[in-house]
Length: 130
Length: 383
Image 1 (cartoon, each protein chain N blue to C red):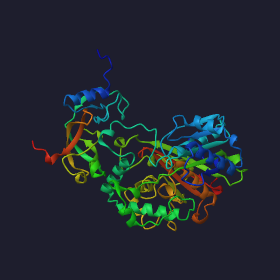
Image 2: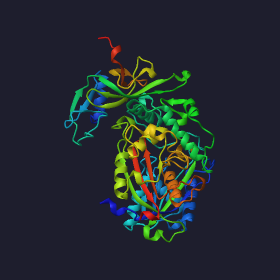
Image 3: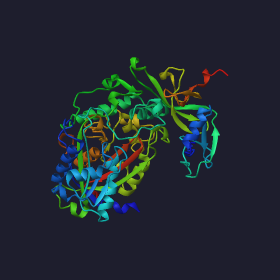
Image 4: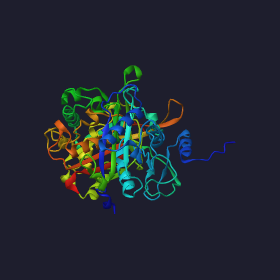
């Protein structure tokens, strides 16, 4: 039986495996916290509340990492600000890397990373058909 | 409270390796050469050093490795590593230790074989596992994200960033010791290969070898040394994050906080600073620091750094040795910024000597614009 403690990071990763994008929310500021941790970086108080993210966000900054075509070509790296206030590194997919713009509305998507672990990426909101 | 550390200690010796490409020499070899030269410059024996302040990219316990190599028995040791600004950060610790009488001769030192060991940034730094899956290049993509945001908020241009690089090269050409001497134009910088938009190879600092060291004593003793003392009028630090995705505001750095404390301690403001040594790991750094250190308004760093203002003959001398972009950058640059400021304040900078050199501000950053350390140095008229 696995007796390892359920850490904030493990809680986050377990939720992602179940298809839910969950983050802790700071009770003092009401802001979601990325990355998961035991105390709020803004108040120092314990983080006890988990909340499911809406997945809505905006590109805060973006860069195209240049890479030779034979190695896979250029790709996007972006800082995304979630509607709930947290900021995280990710990438914007389904659009050319140099077409990603600051201020662009994006939506989170859970995908499998090359090592099989789930990870968060984003796609432009206008491309999402609901 | 902090003002009582103003001018309590002074830099009395500086030293570097002669060149910035030293194949076969280890990091500690190069550090030791710099310490020997700094001790000689100060007119002391190396073994007089009893306070050791050092950091490297290749030693987990740098103070111990350096003390062992040099045969020192330090009474005070500080191996704090806040990235490339560490040595400017060490300055305030050294001044405190001297002032408290915990040591009498403090040495801040660094060495690296970054270039000859393969030309890649070799580092003990842990990979940020929240960022690694997205493939940012370390550290350039962090600075690229900062530059992109600054361009978006303030219409800063790549040409303005190129001005910073071209100014650094013009200074380097006045410094025979500078590593990069080739002519460079704005167009050359703009034509350079982009690595992580908007930053090109030419926007990045050099990768070199090298060692640097400074020696400090209490101000009363400093007067009896071979060179005129260069007083530490202020030294202060700040930190806002470790990795780029946690930077609270990508266009306003911790330099605001560290420089505010430094100006207060020095009793000086930006308009009383004669020359600047700014850690130019990337061209965008200089633009941000000119804003955050109070030399121009937020968002105006691009235009401010242009039209030759920070180049030789310009109104505000910045990075008079050629900086990390054109003089040397052995992985961590902070100590070299300090050394150039000391040489200028002494009036010993020869062809690149600036006209007014009573006060110098040195500012460094470390990590990905994460740590900040500001020092103000002054000549005899400032005390």
